[in-house]
Image (cartoon, rainbow, N blue to C red):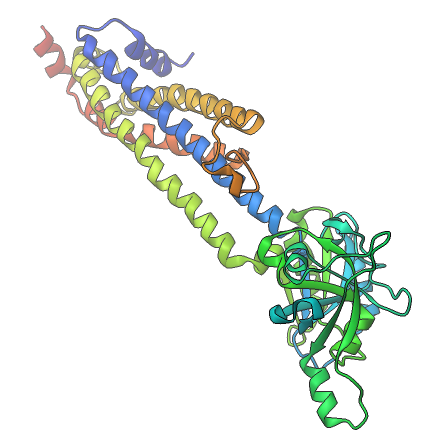
Length: 421
């Protein structure tokens, strides 16, 4: 063992003339432990909320979205889908046409509502995500049946408009959609026909309350007729093997697409303000709780300074035997590191164990959990966060030992021995 480390361990664990020093050192280590544990638990909970919100939004948001900037420029659907398929991370590509329309229903004429209408090709829609996976009543069927196209709507909207899919003995509800292009076409073209397009309710989906009240899906060919867009698309939604591949896919697409015609957005870009606020809360909590470790570090300054005073004669003897100032400084810096290792190690262990207990058993419940989608605080432990917290805590402990180390290195060996004698 290096002699400097051996001396540092001896100074920390040996018997003292002033027992108070040992108590202050122990309090310092406990403070570091509590601070590190609190940081890990709080950041893990904030990570859990971030993952929960992200997964909830990704129930309808794609991993990557390609949007056509110029609505008049048209988009080669097959060429764009072929380009997306070239990247190995792309699992599915769903072309869509989107716009707003007025939904009308005779049974609830007083609550006619503007909704966001998305036209998709069911052949490309993955059944494991999005609206297709969230059908709670009825089924996901947009094709024409009995000369009537299908539509799926949010459960809350269906309840407001008294709409239900068909069932044995009860026909499916029928609604009409009317868009601004359809109304304009009615007034500008002679014999253009009614602007209303009739649809049969095939299913009710349940995702989020805000989303469920203002979103419907129809077949992409019906959307072309509704919005008078015989060619082109609004965009293309991509699902990937992993969310971590989103930036890589975005870079790949940006290298092949004209930025003046297309906008490429990752899942983070689509909800950037919300995600940024959540990340800001996380790092704000990190800085605030790091103050606990900082207070413990000030205790380390005091305890090591008292050790320097107590060991003044020993330091003088070491200097007389040829130990350099640099080695003396390292001895006391190692003391700070040892306190940091003990405190941080115990804090990491406690923090991870508490986080795992909350994750697996939901020990701490949310207040009024009945109004939430979860009943306990969610937890997601990040190895990067645990590592960062450990490094910061160790750094603060070593930094706290700097002043006592410099003071010890400045001791004059002759004066120290003479004063002790």
